[in-house]
Image 1: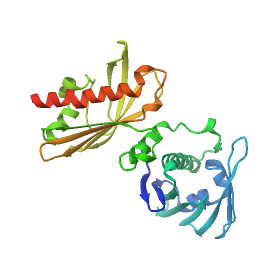
Image 2: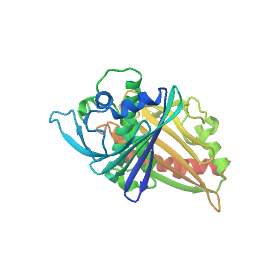
Image 3: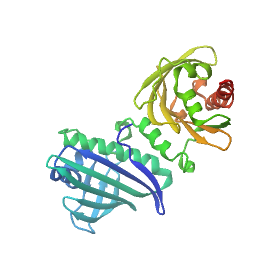
Image 4: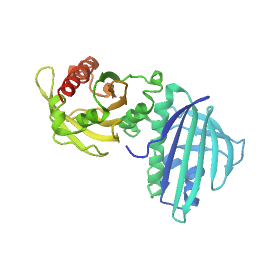
Length: 313
């Protein structure tokens, strides 16, 4: 997943920071983020005067024409624009890389924990729309009209994954988490996790596997009634002998989830931790996608099959 912002917990709430390199001169980018005539395309209708202390009105494009308010804190064209929005703080910073490109850093802070994931996802979408506007798009984004918002399920899952370990209390849906300590080195466990020839003995018979970001693989697993489910996966993060993460989807079904393996060295071997996040995005009327089935499956895989295989190596 490209261009993800970084979420952190601050004293006054959560904060997300985005960095983008935009292939446009700084003056053009500044106009796009500070001119209401440009903001209406990729953001929404926003009214304000370019004066510190000026009131900002954010106009949603829902059926009720909802309005929300903030304040201009400071403007330093074409480098820095700071405003508040219902008590939250947005800081836009631009640095010219050369005459044709600009580094944009946008931070948004003072976010309530309940909204940390959704707000991060929302601004990620908006920044993508900003890029499209800079590239010449005349499409107007229907901000606040839910039926017209971009599909953000994968983004939400990736942002939830960022804070699932450090601040699980803010997540509406908790991941399945299974841990097991084994008497094997991290190197040995890592090879079992990432080498196709070994995976088939304790995991699934995958069609191929290469532990590099972007690699796609698939495998077939049987459901509770013996039917085949084709699993579609893409590796999204690799830290050798420490972290392996990939998406997990099903051919022919909506939904997006993330599986993450963490390895930690212990005094007697290695602790293996697996998290599976996003299960709620799969069709809940399908029994095979029920949470308890994943709990049972990962406990069997991590709690028994993998340790038994490692014990034989």
